[in-house]
Image (cartoon, rainbow, N blue to C red; front, side, top):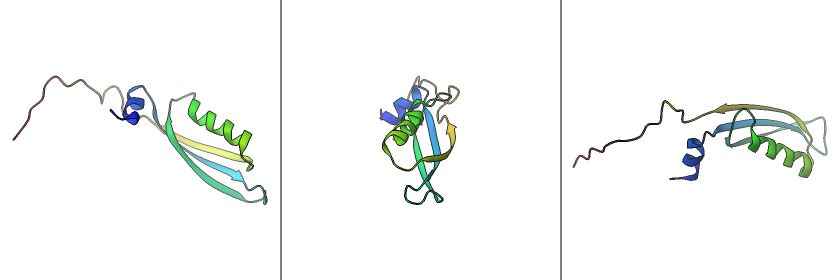
Amino acid sequence: MTNDMELQLKGYGLTTAQILYRLPDHPALLQTYIWQHYDIAPDFPEMRSFLRFWQEKLDGPLHSVRYVHRKLISATEWRALKGELILH
């Protein structure tokens, strides 16, 4: 089983964040950065960790962050397989 599938089965969903930040040399200009990772709503520990890293290590100050989150597998979509039918 892949790592992505394991995370989804543990309740992680795909989080995409659009990060606007100011350019260090030209603070009047904004630049966009797209970040995507598996994370858990509503606390978003992975995204918070990334934003903390950004504020501590990178020069471009954050302007705003917009994000969306979607669970790719829900309880109603996952079920155990009780049998297998093989053709040919």
